[in-house]
Length: 156
Image 1 (tube, helix red, strand yellow):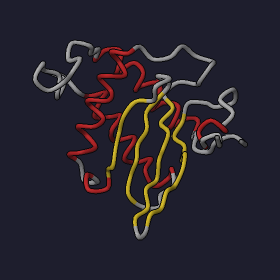
Image 2 (cartoon, one colour):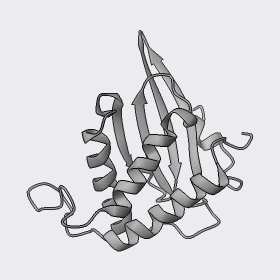
Image 3 (cartoon, helix red, strand yellow):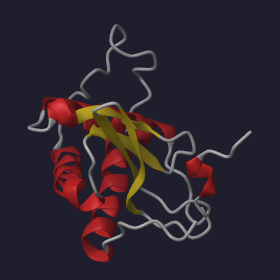
Image 4 (cartoon, rainbow, N blue to C red):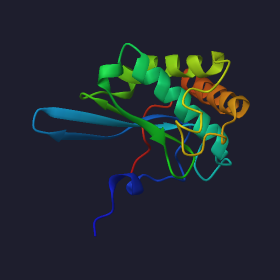
């Protein structure tokens, strides 16, 4: 079996950042997949599950209600709990989606109140939320994007 592309990235040298993971085309449709690495794999502790869950709910709510909502295919967590996948229609580069990702971070950092979609009838694990931790990870991630400009995968 062929190794999938994401397993060919050297995770020992991956830092927090926003990376174009892959571009897929089928007919006239192009989908760009971005890795939003909130923590450096194998160098920092992974994010706790309630924080990941809260970022997922808030991020998806922001993205699916914003000006680019028609371009969003998917936003969700990585199984390794080091970040999130953002899939968007179009042949895009990290620089193209950086403003949107920063706006999403601001939305999470400024959010107060009940987490959208966090009721028993809306979510299969609705009690597993932590807004304070979600803000902690989001602030660190945004800082890495703004200060370190991490947008390019290291060599495969």
